Length: 332
Length: 285
Image 1 (cartoon, each protein chain N blue to C red):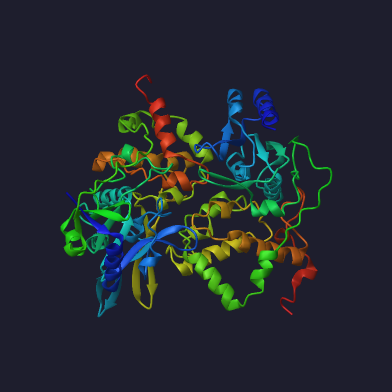
Image 2: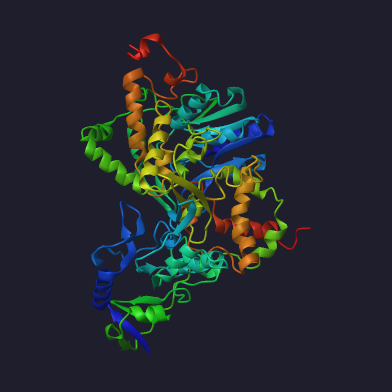
């Protein structure tokens, strides 16, 4: 037995949510579809492959103030940033939800990043299963699936005009009133099958190919922009700067990426990853070896955004296949 | 065309005339193209050339200053190459230019190749590269000198200051400061970009409307009289900011003021690299 919500009731529910919460959903900005606050449900796009930028921007924003510092009577007072508004993210894909679960591992490990924690606590995730596997998708190779309910509070799966509702957490249960749901015999269609890449055992292979000339050849082509990192649902590097205005200090953090020149430059001027090949290699070592070593999972969810946006087609799917060949068991 | 390119590349690599040939190969989507660096003669069969080869490869020459390199250039790319020669960033003897007579590039995105020519290619009247050592393809019998048409720029100029301001604010609001525009631009080669300078700090790290506008504006001004119109910045922008409109506005200004367009000749002296007394424009009077 499953429970479903009709499209009409879904829209009515979302309209009601809008009244007292920030409702963030896929919507058209100028051209790209992005997660943005909507003011009416008509602006929500239900039929889309995925947004140009991952929903991580609502938990780890491109820029945010961490705290303010002020000196009063010779005492320094720190005022941390606090979030007031409760939010709902509607329509996020299971892969992107897994992306958040991975960032959690880094940001919520003790000592937790309190601002990120607030974003997570005050936001309910309403996921939307994928009805199609898009050409860029490879989520099943990265340990998730088009209908994976593991990382959302509520998962909706469209079946014709209705949606199968899976309520996963208490947070989800509290958000969606029972009276909008009906018991149903509807069976979810089999999930689509995204393309499969040879990710099995990649950690071990990565240990063997650190000094391969592969990296400098790949770096020939890379233009070292930050695009892959900024669209990625699992990249979480940032830069911090203090701004001073009228005696008040504001500490701001903004997205940064390991591809930037100077990302690892130290105060004395030395940069251990000054070379382009070292920078590019770091990106993939972090995803495919260092993050798994620290947190037990590959830092990629197979959303394929980086594959789509890379100006020069640095393709992680191809890279994984290449690395498997280079570092395979036959290599001395 | 492809056969000619492969043949020449093989000859250059086998004869050790060059260390590397920079060209194009098919991308992983099986439809669009991507840059390719060929070091071994056996690899030349990967080289392709068709209407998807839109990337301007000239920027890569800045990474190959020490080695002799062959590069495939279209006409617009040859302007960028001339720009780097004009600005003494590369040595002519270290580059072997394989020019291709350009059929015009079609609009491509990952996994999407349209039949439609890119807007810049619809306007283009110069199909033969302006500088090359070896030419691939048949140049048209007669070519009009390259001249930009500025219909969209004029349309923007006709708007009020408030309207223009609103338009550009809206555009820069979407910017995520990924710097893809800078990274692909052949004119952006500063060893330290102004956005990364700390003393003084010209623009903050906030990825926010005010800072984004400063970034976009200063970058555009740095390219005044230097942009060769390859449009790579606009192609790679993930949030579709119409950067060519900004760049071509400045190109038009420089054209009207100095009768100059970037990269038309390998020997040109760029207007901002020279000074004539009569250009004092009343400063100090």
